Length: 478
Image (cartoon, rainbow, N blue to C red; front, side, top):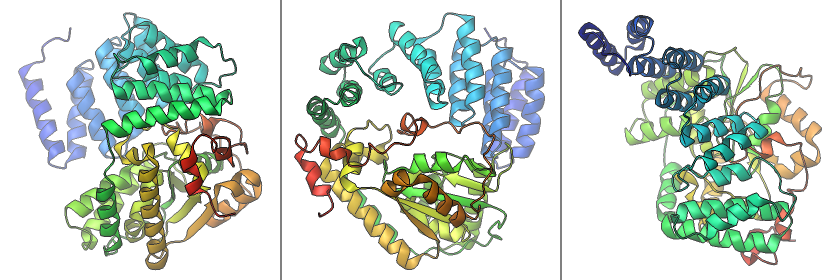
């Protein structure tokens, strides 16, 4: 149990919190660093210090702050769980793994910590370790209604035996009415993934139809709201930022419909020297929402502040790079704001056969409500129509270089395609391989991004066409 803090320490903690809320992060950090040195195991101090550091783009410093906190607390379970999740959100998975391992070594481990340790390992590409953690979480009695561990487990390997015990496990949970519909659907996606691995497309299609229907019925997507969103973006004018545009900062936005290869292309490009893949940052989403909600799109000052914030959170405090990749596919919604903040930015727009895209969306269990359209083919069509309308508009109105990349071209001729992309970005064609650790993959493509480049995903929808007639509507004319 944590000892009571002296009253003077409580007052200084309150002062630090006030400084942070008053947009004085440097002063807050100085005070909090002193407090942590005096009380290294105090959770409120460590967590607030990490939050202050993260707000300044100092993700590595925040991760080390929380590792210090966990060590001082002897990896107390609740502190470790909270800290490891925070560090995971910072994409500092090596530190998150240290926290998880320290807590696991302490004993008396909660199922939730085992689940988190599995997520950290899987996103870092350590699939065997992640499987061990997920199985331990299941055996420890994790709440499957709250934690969809079966879906995570299914995406750690390929299934080759119809008698595999895990497949029966998926099927039982999918059929068990004691679980809530969301949990059952998640187990259904796990089952369908295994059935697809076994090339049992009829069974996979039936499972996917039921799982998607469960989610669509319980959490319907608002297509009318999406149409209003698209119309609003089409009518917006954005003032250029009044900053110097940070000419030394070269953001590359990789956009497109989800499941079109955005994670894959970022992973491939990140193998070059001087490139830093920031994953699906979601920072632009936050900035755009704030600018729109506050009515600030016409303010050059606000756009300049937004550009500074984005740059800070992209550069962070690890080794410097020349090019920063933001692979959030849904950034296609805000390219007018990108152009206003960073006219020197580059955009790679991924395109993929629409029938293959539709099947891939329909086969995936997504966690974010922005992807709620993926569970119904009519909703998918509405979303795709909005995507197309925005891209046509940006190409006519926004002064940004956009490289149109077909997924099929990438997997058919990867070397030539990557050379063209590097030239477009400004890297040149002679690229030295990067020694950086692979960026954690926290998107739905976590398994695929770690596999060798393969062509079997091209035309995959044909295997499902006899069982999913809706896919034909997305197919390009012969």
